[in-house]
Image (tube, rainbow over all chains, first blue to last red; front, top):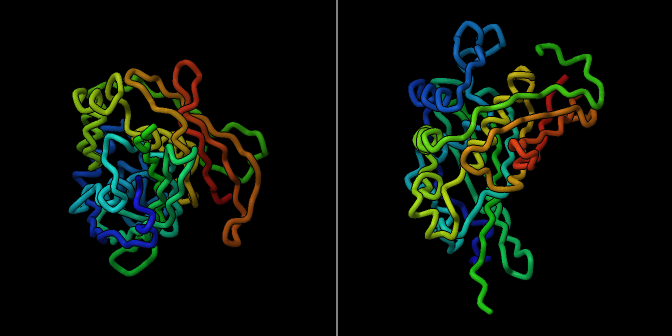
Length: 151
Length: 136
């Protein structure tokens, strides 16, 4: 069963740089051809100082540069074979662009048992700031833990 | 669509289809995203976890939905973007991402539209159900 005492626990902060090569790999994987993400002039015309990142890329940056990408599993007492991604939310407050260095500060916001304990929902909330200390985004990930039911 | 000031409730503003999800794309996404969970690329691991095959990362599917969204809405207008992962997306799925204006809302003092978003496979099965709030 999931360790409910983990609510409020802070996970290790992650510092991630928005590198153009890694971002290009992501765009190519997704077939992302929108000029705003591919052409500095188009980005500038849209009001950005540099090439921005696509809307889900914050999630990737945190995982890529985390020392332990699945630290939350250890904290919850779960393993990769028994989890699914339940929900994901991003709130955008300021642009994130190539060259930025972001700091991710995640914590376990809630843990809730469902279906008589057959599954547990854990919410990890992450505040994201940039190299200027600007709060650029909040991310919220709901992890579904499929508990091993003993009859 | 670059103008968002003439929106009406019910307008379908987001619509994009994607090629079938291949094992190759899952492998590329594993590297490109930093999500190295073997369940999406290692058949042995997936089977040991009780699944018949590997399956798509939820965040790969959400990235497709995000792409469909910002094809239609200028990215600087995006305020929130959220989804529920309703069902596992299988290999070979041909995704269709759609969104329509659900209502007009105020978000942190700004006039916005809330878009209701879905991603379905070629059978019409819903994989993601979400929403985005955009400034208008």
